[in-house]
Length: 319
Image 1 (cartoon, one colour):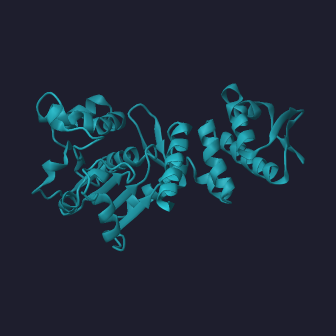
Image 2 (spheres, rainbow, N blue to C red):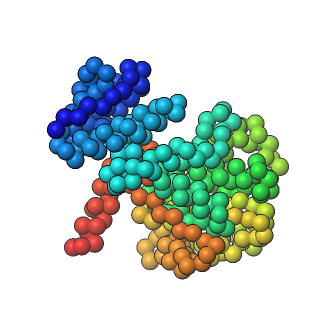
Image 3 (cartoon, rainbow, N blue to C red):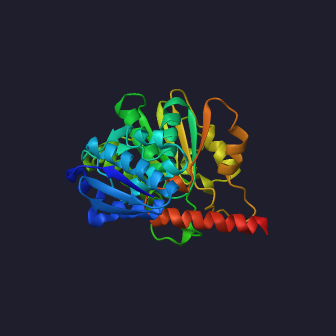
């Protein structure tokens, strides 16, 4: 089957992308060949592949028409929706700007999973973001925290993580406690600096409007008028998670993020993330958002790695 796709020359250049990587992605994903002809493109392949490719190309051209740049990662995300019969949802990708960073970069939702997550954070008091690496769980939570602060909805931003990671122990790291925990909190520092700008970030940190601390520092406190993020929550114990959740004060929001496939707790200790998500899932003010490999927005190889591990885990469970 061959079908003609009409596109003007200027749009065609943008559609093909750097070194033709976009159109090569379309060919690979849809199992078709795309050839340049006068006035547009010929798409060659079986009926299903050609129909998918035409739908995908139409969506990409529409995006280009809005002035937004298309890359192969965006092509993949659009294809996922086409393959699931949700092509009408493509218009919603890139449509929700969460915040504009200090350098003018727009932070927006790149997948439907991210869109659902951001909507939940806006509407619920406590939100769990659970899923694999590279899905933007922490980054979007920080963006939402900064947006809430700038809108006057909260007075403080509090970010915390358990100081357990990848089998390492703090006692073997050099320096005082702050020096030891800084590497664990670095992703949070970096995201806040990008959102606020370095100078504003430092001023807010000095005034304790921004607080970044190990989870142990939360004990015994009531956190009011705050946007609180607990990152890497898969490494909390059940007791730590209960302690954290009960810190919630008036006019505050909590976002708990974690990857339940990367638990570094000692054997025999249950993850507070997994337990709490089961216990709290039926409470109206709490929402559990689960990300999948289709929400990975880092390098496309990360998506393949996540999917490979999921398949391996499924095989081991079925043995």
